[in-house]
Image (cartoon, rainbow, N blue to C red; front, side):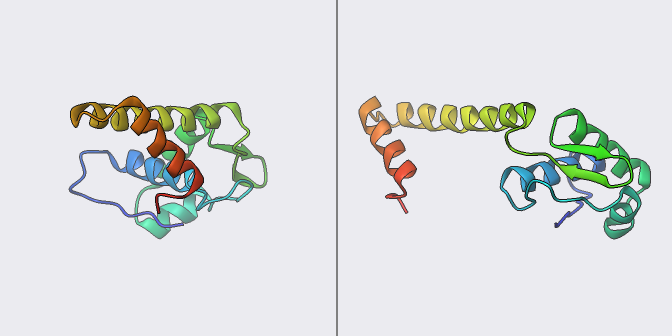
Length: 126
């Protein structure tokens, strides 16, 4: 697990922590069932306050990415979790919207875009 804090970012520090953890969970870099470092340990590792990491963890829990378990700490939830699935769907929709707008901008036909999607799905576009 890697968290990089930037003083140049427009995002507050807790949001940077939250977004980076969320990204790593969505990408599978932090698999389901993983116990995250304690709030205090993470705060010490990345050099921020306990309040900052507490807020990041609380928001991740509210969004359905992690669950706090008494005596165990915070655990990454399954991708079968409905809230996490919804976050993934939003991510897909956003990516598809960008792809569709780009395709329209260059005059790509719908069928051609679908072919590209099929190629990406099948791994032919790599």
